[in-house]
Length: 120
Image 1 (cartoon, one colour):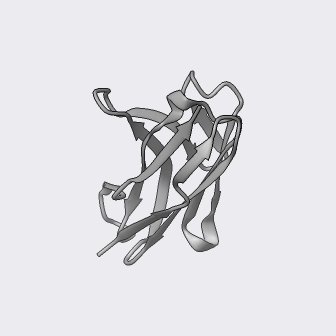
Image 2 (cartoon, rainbow, N blue to C red; image 1 turned 45 degrees about the vertical axis):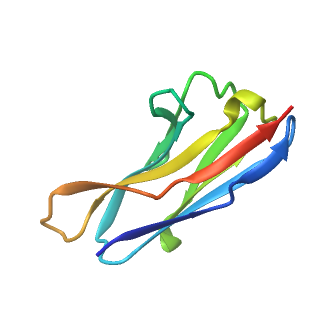
Image 3 (tube, rainbow, N blue to C red; image 1 turned 120 degrees about the vertical axis):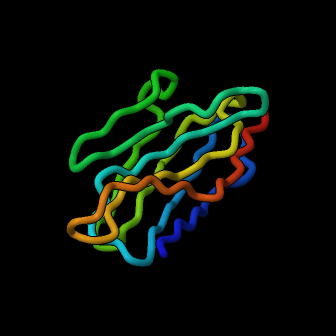
């Protein structure tokens, strides 16, 4: 069984920074994609950032403030968030697309979410 453990959320003032971590463990042959999404109350879940191999993709609202990275040896993704704004307040979810074995299909797994609150 594969698990995702997220950490790093919390309360920060506007203009501050947070670093989120997402560690995958269990029966993993490969991880194709690691991504962060967020969902604020009343809003749909939206993509924050994703990393596939060496390529990254960000939501339009990021505007250079966030950086996603991954440590393949640790099956861990990071999201460095700088210049945070109150509108960044949301639950942040990690997601991975992975294969459990060499011939397994690709499955998506979601983390439990971590709260990020930015005060004005």
